[in-house]
Image 1 (cartoon, one colour):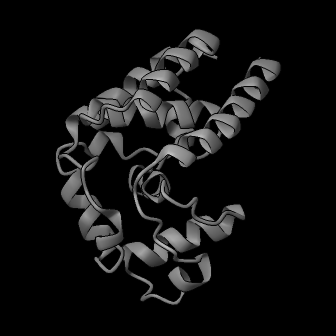
Image 2 (cartoon, helix red, strand yellow; image 1 turned 120 degrees about the vertical axis):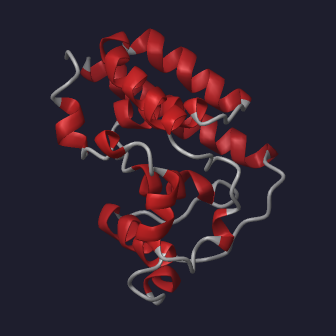
Image 3 (cartoon, one colour; image 1 turned 135 degrees about the vertical axis):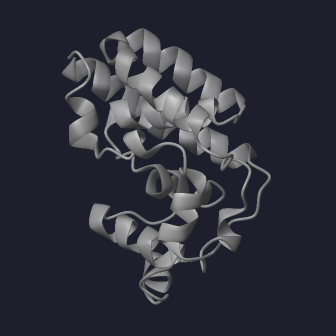
Amino acid sequence: MRHRKKFITWLFKWTMVVYCKFKKKEAWNISTAALLEMKKHTFGYKLGALLHKNGFELIPKVERHDAYHLLTGFGTTVEEEIALQYCCYGNGKRTPYLYGVLLIGTLILPEYFPFYMKAYRYGKNANDFHHFDFKQILKLDFKSFQDTIFTSSAQLKMDYHQRKKHIAI
């Protein structure tokens, strides 16, 4: 399984470079340090804290991906990256890149399929979030925004370790 995860990680890195070249959106041009200067209760500050904790900066033109991580609580392991895409699919997002991740991730790591299905239902049960311009959300209160999105999904607010207990690995 370790080699399969390494292969998917390599695919993510390679395809992200290609994907960003053709992405037509404007970059936010906001650093992690600038996010950390925002008020502590805001979505922006929490996003900055997440990035800082993981040693990341926002990827230009695909910043919303990191916002999805923060909003949904999915981490950055290979299986969680795939689960995040299932969550977004359940929420209504449709992109060629997402379809590719779902297909390849499921084929290469099928043992996580129960986890992926939970992630799909998580997104399906949530209020729509995939369409937001997350740059405009940065100044909002994080907890209030998250609660608005996941009002009917209380059981799905499990942290990763609780979710991991429910999948067969």
